[in-house]
Length: 486
Image (cartoon, rainbow, N blue to C red):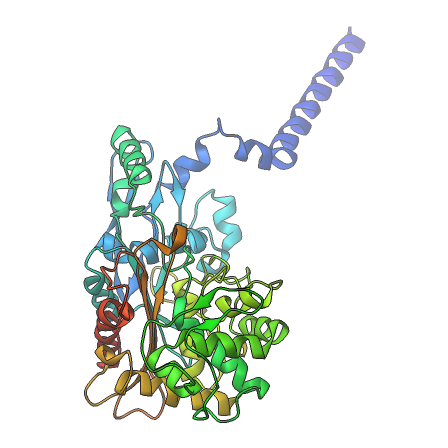
């Protein structure tokens, strides 16, 4: 009898051991797979069980939370949602996250290990600290000036600090309210469908994700390449360029939108935006050196993040001479984001050195204790310091005497470059109006802001320089706001 009891005890012990092994397997070996299973709602419920941390502009929250009382409890709210949507992105229980909400999700959701000195305690307790804060580099006054300047027209504005790379404004228009995507239910799904079906594409971040032909603003890159390569040694010397200019190897004649470009110098070509002169200079520089110059400015680089990813700006590496001529004036296949062209202006303003643009100043715990601070980083040298100094002079001439007079700011030194980018089949589309610029206040020794403005639906006179009428006034307003002390 005792023997049977002993056998039964051993069998029960074996069953207990098997149960413990299986529990260990489920909790350790299979934990990740089970947590990732779409049918497991525990992680999603836990994610929204507490309020999300805030995104800050000028130290003030532009986000918030509301208690929905539902299973996915806390929903995201936004202060001035359309104004800051290109910066914050959205946080939705249904559609996930985007932009800063996505890039800094671990901090905002409270899962970043730097938010507590005892991360293992929260793992054991199956809890998490309060969501942290993300401070942006955006200045509210500059952001609002850019948003108001576009006034709902399709386009984008980017303003950066040349010496650091801090993004002071990031605006895409038309915009949308990310708060309509928070939560779950039919209203959220209807809002998502409506926004995605809108032909104006309000959810497209044109400042970071859309690429445009940069038009004549790219002539700054071509001028830098020519000066660095020694192709042009005297910016005031005649270039012996006919008007119109026959594209090499073709019978196609390249015209100018402005007069007085025949045999113009490079200085005059920048000031009056002469296509013929800059196209010829690009051909003289040659494909290899033009590609190298464009890539020093950041073209053909798909790795840029701010911290959200940025679309690649492109300059072809295999072209015939006629294609190179057009590419050298920002046409053919040359494409650039507004951020990229702001970086071009910033490189000129910063003596040729390019800083990595960034949007997050730092992150902190809910009580304000810092977790991470961003620091300026150098992307590389786009041009020699002497070349940058010469281009600064040429860009000042554009604003003081040339095509960009609408960007002038009393008491400040402003350098700029207009651009009218043709597009569409046979260039039948309304031109994109561009303006890139930098500005230095009367009390500053160095430029304090660089800006790029593109207006897609500019009602431009195709015979004129639309960048001056449509984009330059916006740039002036943004730079004025940036030069005004907070």
